[in-house]
Amino acid sequence: MAGRILVAIESKPVVSALRRDLEPAGFGVDAVPPAAAAGKVDPARHEVALVRAAAGAELVVAALRRADPTLAVIVLFFDEEEAQGYPGALGSDGLLVGPITPSQVAGTCALAARLTASRRQAAEQARVTAPRSASGATDLAFLKRLLFVEVKRSRRYGFPVSLALVSVDRWDELSEQLGPRARATLLGELTGVVAAAVRDIDISVPFSDDRLVVLMPHTATAGGLQVARRICGRVRERSSTIPLTVSAGLASHDGTGTVSFGALVQRATEALTRARQAGGDRAVSAEPPKRRDRISMG
Image (cartoon, rainbow, N blue to C red; front, side, top):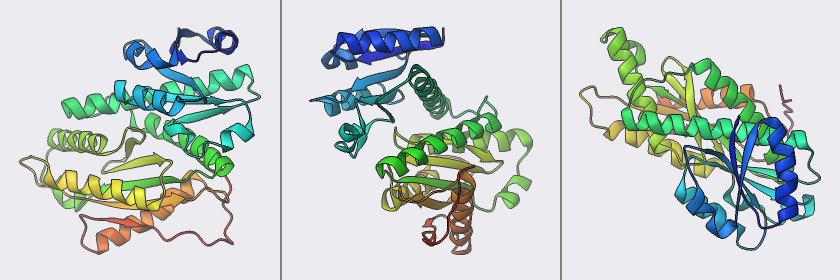
């Protein structure tokens, strides 16, 4: 069994259709009234919540967030016109817009389940401040796929998306003073601090030895800078025997045109370089791309 989906939808025909789409893909379905959904969330069982866009849906999504901040929430819309009436997507992590095929339902839930798993892993790391057990390469591959979905969604509905590259200041100098175990412990602690500093809609994963990348859906430049600056402040103010600061470079996509993971990382890297040149311990935003530049997905 792939996991269980909490379906917070009143319509029995819609619930039956979702059950037909999800159960062959290995998902279990727990159908509950929307008003009671938050009280039915079980982090040990539920990997995704599905909510129908209807009166009060925003309150249902917010209640689910409070009940379990790690749970990915997907909102269902009957058609494009209805989806365009909710520009903020009700604060959800993703959309399903009709007409919907069984493969779209199962594929979206599978991706959302991975987002939930990643958030729960990050929350556990923040609790124990231990090094990641999963490989950074796997996390990064997942982030690329998630970014592809977020950028596609931002282009379709005009949602912004931001990416921050966070790097330890003077890492080469610092690492020479530490043994392998101390370096791993310090980087594990950094991962936990960053995970605790970002919002519940964000996801952070290791990017290289001394860097992490943070994906921020539904976030324009100003909001992304606020998160990046909070990360710098939390790292600076943490209690530890080893002083540590980080710099962050931010790149944003405003929902128009096309963009790739590599293009965002390149722009974030350029901004990170400027942050370091300015003395470190700060967040800097990349310059917006020129409108004549066209960057394809891939």
